[in-house]
Length: 156
Image (cartoon, rainbow, N blue to C red):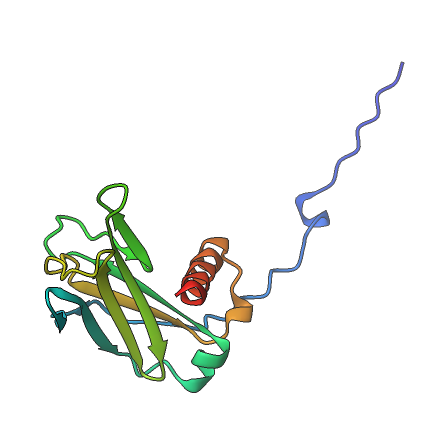
C-alpha cells in the first residue's frame, strides 16, 4: 500500500488582482427640507419639495441613475428609507412618497391615496445619490431600486 500526497505552495496558485471598479457616484450630504403645501382647494392637495442637485447633468439623465433616501431628524439613530416609499394605513388608504429628476433638480412629492391634504410629512431630511453611468452598477440591491423607480414612473 502506498500513499501519494500532492501539494502546492501558496505562491503556486495565484490570481491577478481584480481590476478596481471606478466609483462613478456622487452623494449629497444630508439635506434638511421644509415641505411646500400644494393646495388644490376643497381639502385636496399634496406636499412637495425641490432639491437642487447640480451633479445631475444631461448625461446622468440619459445614461445614469438617481437614488433618493429620506429620514426623520427626530429619530435617535440615523436610518434612511429608499424612495419611492408607501406607508399603508389600512386596506384602502396609504401615503406615497415619490420623486422625479431632471438636470440639476430632484422633486419629491408626498400624497395620500384619497388626495385629501395629508398631515405635514414627518420625513424632513434627504440624501441623493447620483450615478453617472448605470452600466457600471453591479450591486443587485441598487439595480432593484432603479427598476422599482422606473416601474413606478411607467405606471404613473
